[in-house]
Image 1 (spheres, rainbow, N blue to C red):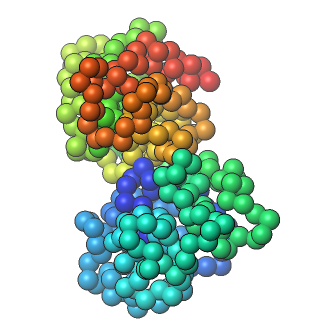
Image 2: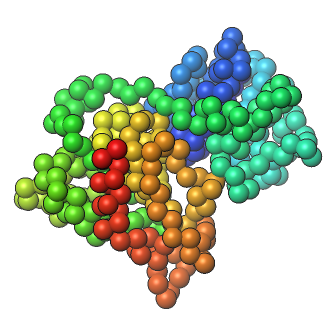
Image 3: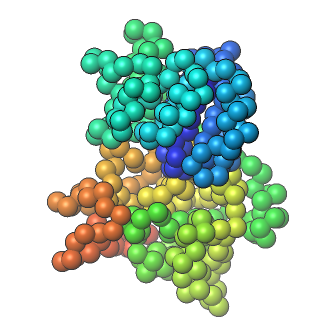
Length: 340
């Protein structure tokens, strides 16, 4: 079986219930996971092969090798035309995926009016992924039951000791991770608010170790926070852009609490046991809220939400859905989760 992973880190993390359920349903199948380069950093348990690439398409050699393997069944968890087109070109006889984007003719299973393949239809995306397994489920088994069983699937972290040595990250049992970046400005809790959260929490626990994580595109927010506390007695370490995704996962797993915007790392936190404080801005929480077992999600549910705009369209009160969440409330949430 071939599984085309979603195209975004957060969606890939949300797909772990699907990966686990598929492995359980077909214990003897050889499973190959393909997708963009970060897929190789977060590999679900029990998968035989991972093929990843930079950019939007596999290299010619990768494509030829995949075609030669003659897969019998394929799934695409991406709603893109490109992913369905790839499965068709690979000559896989049975291809499952979401309808829409003009790609229905590339999928071997036409729409069943009684069993919709839902994507972005007011239900959680991880459940939508599991609905793709409906043709293989016994009549009495529902995707909702699979979701209840596998929604908290986790990933065993790498050794934090080895990662700490590599990144000069001192050992600490009192670590809080901040992830202040995101792919859209309409998902970013203000940097000044993050700074105030650090100040408020540190008033009670001044020896906390604060770690900033993110990709290279998040360097502006992480640097602003780190520079603000430079020269103070607080320990604020900026590892933005210095870790692989799997290393970031291990650091998240080592933290007491993670505070993250609606981002890939917020969802990666769900693959750990670490409690999460996060925010819902432009999106719809019912579809894409992180699956962390312990979490506090701030969502003001304004009349303009969800707008799904990458930049806030409002002029009267820009980014009210995030700006109006006070640092005091976020600091209280951190304290609540730290107390267990």
